[in-house]
Image (cartoon, rainbow, N blue to C red; front, side, top):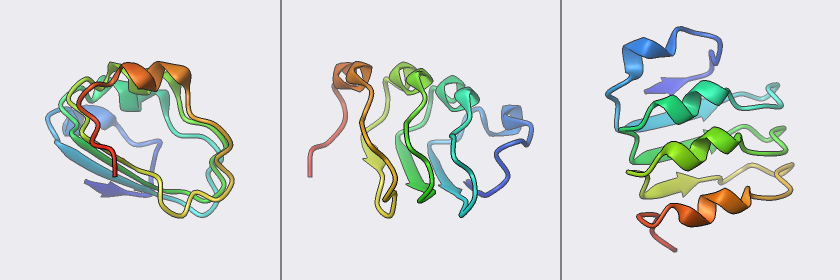
Amino acid sequence: MDTDDFDQDFTEHILKKEIILRSESKKELPEWLGQLVHLEIVRVRCPRVRELPLSLQRLTALTTLDLYENTDLKDLPVALGALVNIKKT
C-alpha cells in the first residue's frame, strides 16, 4: 500500500505486509499504524515527521523500517528495540 492519505479508513489494509507513507506536509504518523500487525515493511517518506508513534512496537512481524528522507526525525522510541525481527543494515 502506498498512501499519502493518513486519514483514510485503515481497516481495508489490515492484512497488508508493506506500507509506504508519503507526505510533504504531515508532521505525525497515525497511531493506527500499530494496528496493522501483519506489516513486515514500513517505508516512511515524510520529511516533516519528528517522531514515530509508540504503536509501532506492536508490529512484531516488522523486518524493515525504512526512514530514508526523514530529515526532521529526531529520535526513535526505545520500545522499538524490542522488535527482534528488524534487519540491521
